[in-house]
Image 1 (spheres, helix red, strand yellow):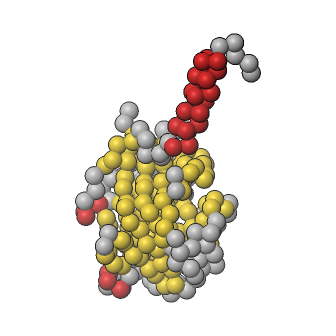
Image 2 (cartoon, rainbow, N blue to C red):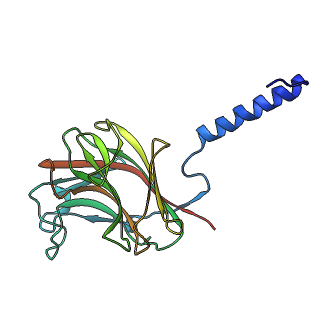
Image 3 (cartoon, rainbow, N blue to C red):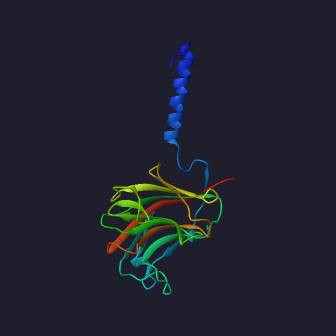
Length: 218
């Protein structure tokens, strides 16, 4: 496009470049307010017959969670798969726009493990489950949303717009996946390791640090 005035042309080019920069540099937490967390918000779920220190540790700001395929569930009355998870307690929600943020590390060999989820829904038990299979992240056991995640720290931002009925996943600040949710319910975030129904490794581990919860103000 030719501009009769070079200054106008320069201004247009500058605005286009600035807009591209803002889009590229936008952060998933922009427009959200941090919700302070205390130790009471971190409920650790683990095999019910195993002492906490044999499946969980917290050192230098890092939560380390591990479980074995033949472990028992977290409750003697439960028939679910074994898990060691952080359940964000005291911040259940049923409306609004909420966000989970954390930095995850999954060691090579862990496979068939849910590392982050939103529990609760109108239809089914969960809104979203994100599992690691052979270093790749999948939506439940289906669509691959990211690859090559073993042995590296990566930032996870999981946003749930309850009123809009959608969930959006960012990894390292880049949008990777979006899907419809499963309807409103008693909703809360969880992270750690929770064995899938099938095709799981015997040993499963995940590490998490920098866990935060955000809420978008109306």
